[in-house]
Amino acid sequence: MAAGDWTLTRLRAAVAGGDVSAREVCDGYLRRIAAADGRIHAFTTVLGEAALARAEEVDRRRDAWRDRPLLGVPVTVKDVICTRGVPTTACSRILAGYRPPYDATVVTRLLDAGAVVIGKTNCDEFAMGSSTEHSALGATRNPWAPDRIPGGSSGGAAAAVAARLAPASVASDTGGSIRQPAALCGVVGLKPTYGRVSRYGLLAFASSLDQIGPLTLTVADAAAVLQAIAGADPADATCATEPVPALAGLFPGDARGARIGVPRAALAAGVDPEVLRAFDAALAVLAGRGAAVVDIDLPHMAYAVPVYYLVAPAEASSNLARYDGVRYGLRAAPDGREATLAAMYDRTRDAGFGAEVKRRIMLGTYALSAGYYDAYYVHAQRVRSLIRGDYDQAFADVDAVAMPTTPTPAYRLGEHVDDPLAMYLGDVFTVSANLTGLPAISLPAGFTRAGLPIGFQLTARPFDEATLLRLGDVLEQDAPWSGARPPLAPA
Amino acid sequence: MSTRLTRADVERIAALAHLDLTADETALFAKQLAQILEYAERLREVDTAQVSATWHPSAASAALRDDVRRPSLAREDALAGAPDAAPDGLFRVPKVIG
Image 1 (cartoon, chains in turn red, purple):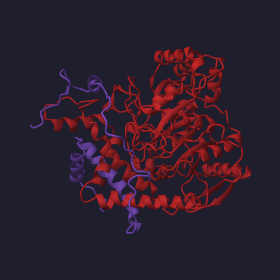
Image 2 (cartoon, rainbow over the protein chains, first blue to last red):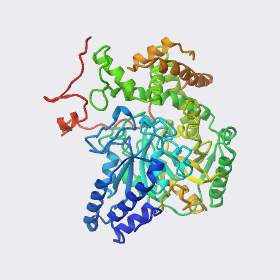
Image 3 (cartoon, each protein chain N blue to C red):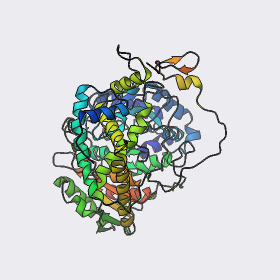
């Protein structure tokens, strides 16, 4: 029987080689979920019988499917990604019980690759939040410290991988929603280049920022999932036609020739000393394996958070207009006041959306409204150009930009729930990759003295995920903490 | 740009956003949105007179396909999630004019 600590790569090989059946693997994970998820709450839906039936299908076709890259691998899917006939709620009351009539392209590709979808994972409502506390289905707990947040918005996806309840998760990242929870839960999280992975079937939050990617235990596993889901899709006009290189086996094991830029000025204030220490230790590892580490300047980085919190809510206010009680989801009952269509819209949306989503819809509507559009929205999009220009200039000299993923380790549940701005400021190092469309990865970089995971982030040129994976692998090879298990992971 | 938000401002935005906010929500959002917008004021120090806007991070223009008829969702599937679907294959809504 496969242990929960097996990597995706090892599990796949074991299933393909007949050492273990896909059903046994699936059953093992379902048992661990049953044992541990009551305390963690990473899942919103667990696919018990359906996942086992799918695993049996994989077993029946094993000989014909032997080369499939995710053969028999259990995978979780964030609850903002459509799964045909399986609840997809965005962790919102407004979509409670909604079962999409189609699969997202990433789900189709996971299935084509031989994967077994074992469940949907918890997140902040419509992926808006950095703590998973803004889920209408209740918060997820950090498997390393149950009184702390797992990060967000993909907190369930990260917690599931960290706690060995799934070897891989796919999730979305609009301002750090893959990388930040990956950092706070001590796993690998990759946001690919904008357009690298199809967004067809992703419930849209901010269409110029959203991207889907993997969370896994290792860099090689992230490469395997990305390989399976990346590439052009006729169903998504923003999905790039750029060819996807072979990502597996591209790791030479050293960083020779790589130039890594560090925006030192941006790290001067507001970063927890233990996070900074781990960051410098990771840089030393990369330097020791042949990378050249140089200082760079990203002069507009201080503006990334305010730009993001105007652009993302503006796009969200438009995207979420579709939730109106007509085509899917909740419709508020008449309340004795006006029974018109317009009144139904307004009541449904007030009853169906949670506070954080309403806050962002309001903020975005304001930034787009007559009299404020130029001063807020257009101006922010112009500063966005300057941020992208900083990176273009940096990438003329370096192959990757290194930053901590987050300024602090995981904070306590409830700590920022009444102070949205404090939560937003924690996104300082992650939002730039979305504003610029650049690929970025968060890698485990050790722990604080209190045992909380710390993340190390690398950003690369457009469509150069290969550099992120190569450097990430170097860091991973040297990591003394690999294999560390969180206290909430079941045996 | 002003970061002072009156109750009337919040009510106007809520109407535009089709949100029937409660009085408590209106008061809370007036305070919180003003804080967030005040933080965003720092963008004013950036001179963008000579800078064009980035609406989208992708340099490529959206891919186009030939306009040919293809199969799509069956009508019953498209209606399956509707809170009120009429048996003749329509979305039913309350009266439009009060």
